[in-house]
Length: 70
Image (cartoon, rainbow, N blue to C red; front, top):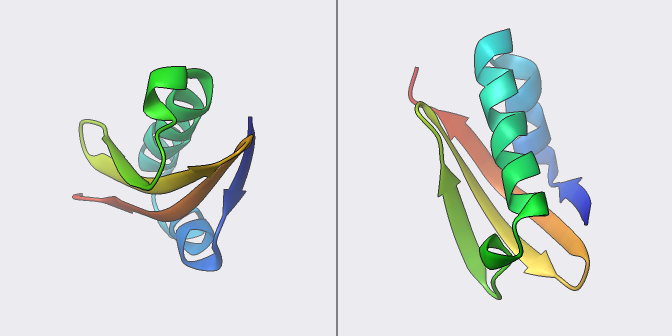
């Protein structure tokens, strides 16, 4: 799967601490590797502190938003 981040989601990755950055990347990787997570429409994935909102189009996962509760 190819992953694309819209600008707002990409900005989050540059603004958070390294440990949170790693958690968001882990969520993206998990979604990209799990066919059950690749559903049509808007979906979300949650970690301990972070979340990811995404959609799947064909072989592309588009990350719409990412954030952290820290």
